[in-house]
Length: 398
Ligand code: CTP
Image (cartoon, rainbow, N blue to C red; front, side, top):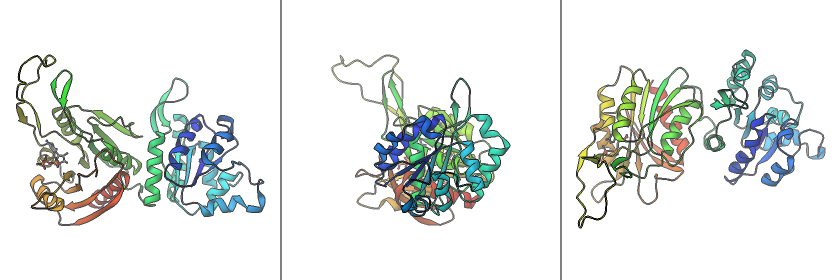
């Protein structure tokens, strides 16, 4: 892999990105611009990558690095990509080692832009981004939020973990991030709900939220306007260019989903919703002084997916998830097929769970079942890869 680093203040985050890319087991060469080295020293990149760092084409000339590095790469990530770097790349210039490598690379190329909002929105930058995208470069949507100084707006570098996840996705599948959801609005729920017992305790589940966050992240990078209704997760950073709405309990999640689904092109229920909630919420902390604990009395929660299907607008796609273990009678796929019919959704992702699969881990696998009778295997891969397959199916049907 090549990690290009352009000269913006977000260059300080590139060391973290580099560390995460090397964790995949790939060899990573860092190609900073001369300006990037004003922000981060070459020694940092050399120590973390285990390779020498050069900016120009006149070092180590006998090995022809300006040609070889690009030719041999499986993936090029440029993070941060500044307005200037994108302008040079769009023009096909080769005035340093990074831009020369970009011209010789034939592998997937991922740009993670970071700059001030004005620069990001300038027609010159917009045109460069469009040109790069039209040539197959994946130019990420930046995150919104606090920029250098006091201003806020789109232009922040996405979280390093998110960039590393998207890089991994492109290694798994070079065409995972087409801009085929541009102009679409989609809603995704994620995480596990918590049903309060008293002010300090709850009934919860093991959902980490990673699959739902991957769905939101991939949809946003495929051009969709995304609302992510997030229940409790294992401390995940908000994906770039996604509107996040927080919901704690099944009742809150239901309210948020029904509101967000209005006018949406697709709705995906990836959240692990509690089927039951305590009948009554005790207003004070339950004490252990009683001789015998009171039995828990539970009431059934509404099925949000079924409600979304019932209220589906014309042309709207509703996607459900099913985590199944299978039992002595039937396998997980059998129960998935039954659930598709029972829930009435357009698509159902069936995950076989148990034995350390699906929950709290990075990878996922299963089947994608369509109400139109189609069934496909979702081969084992990252949760981003599974998300990209789901959006392929949604985009094809939209
Ligand atoms: N779901 C929901 N509302 C609930 C429970 C589940 O919207 N109260 C959604 C989940 O988000 C998921 C799908 O329904 O998309 C299937 O969830 P799952 O827990 O597998 O199914 P259940 O209907 O709870 O069936 P069971 O637990 O009996 O397998």
